[in-house]
Length: 286
Length: 316
Image 1: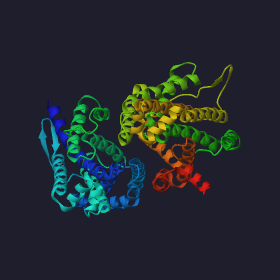
Image 2: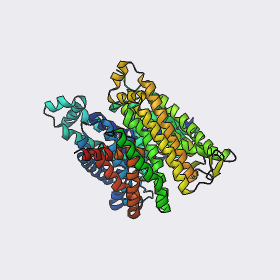
Image 3: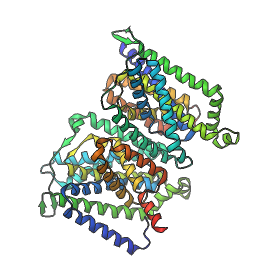
Image 4: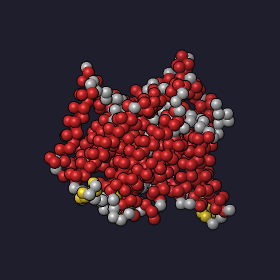
């Protein structure tokens, strides 16, 4: 019983971090039909940039902001150079292009920062007693912070002028262009926002398990699962799915080893794709 | 690549075959082995071309078929005494075939990106199973075994690098001719019409799902064959080859060489492996940085691949 409660909290915290990654991915997919294979690697690079800035300045919040800004700029660069020429082609070519980007980014990180694990120290010290465990406050703070990021994104999309541009472009690209919305600019901006969110979640996740250059592909895969389970391009669904999948993985880890617990989320994905291909949390599949 | 005349095609085919046959006799040992490897990876890439180029389904899970071929071959070589080459091939095909049936049944119901993601996920499932089931698969270390002898009727001999190259060349050539025949058959035509327009193919009355399933199984079998050959060449089976990076490389071979040509994947594999060999001489493991950039540039500027590019340049 105690273990179940602990795993519930663990699942929720991991789920919130995953939700930030996945909402960036689903935003990019929803607006550009781009399946971004490099998303996890942007997260990984963000974590490395964060770790480096933290090493120099010692300020976690500065590192978080710097990582988000640097990776957003990288996102702009990638979008303009490689993804913009592919607009209007088969969406599968974007998978290939982003897969290539992911290879380059991964090896670049290895070259720049080496194979060893970087630690990011926790900005919120202290622990509280949870049954027989000392549970770090930082994990709770992470969940709250992730929630704030997602909430901020939601408010921005709902009420901000540019948020309305983005939603309009998602609904009907041609019509949005006709109404005077600069669609290519919106695409680039969305890619930048998605990249920044990936970077931020990378820095947030850093203190949990350290930063390595292989964490990217792991998160790409998990974010994919979440995005498909939640419904491609559906922001709310992705967030619910992130928490759902993380909780299931956390409970499964009670029974089997963590590596095998990953299979459980694969199974959830396959079942979702077979029976509810539009997503688990979409009220009326059309 | 559609040749202008059948005679021209067969002449080109004979020349390439002759070059590949004589290659191990003149090359130094390192490049001998390299040529054999290109053939094996080319076979794997060609199997994936059945899906990518002909049916229009991008598979990111070919490492599962390849890996199961490896482990299937390993199982035969480790459990059956004396180790038999043909039994290894059979076991490998059975292993890959089983996985292919499983993947085909579930993944073919999905289209485009969903198909790509589901094949990726399936291959990761098999990776995790193989990686964690240490008692059977050897876990991270994989399995090692000794090379079987070549049995042809009553004649039997140890493999030398040269005879192994010929053996691989024979298998690859037969596979190529078989797959070429299949893609030109009515069945292959249906696959291509699925690629061009799936709803219309369905409307004409073809059972699209059934055709896709057979295509995935066929593709999986040839990928498994490549896996067995690779296992026999290197005398081991390792979980690294089930990891999805291998699947990604297979897709890269296809894009670089030219999708939907069957020969293109071989050219792509040769191009990729030569580039890797050349670049890793002075960049070690960072060869993927320039290689990835070349790949992305090719996706953008030369989407029809090297063969398509060469064909256009020749026709100009």
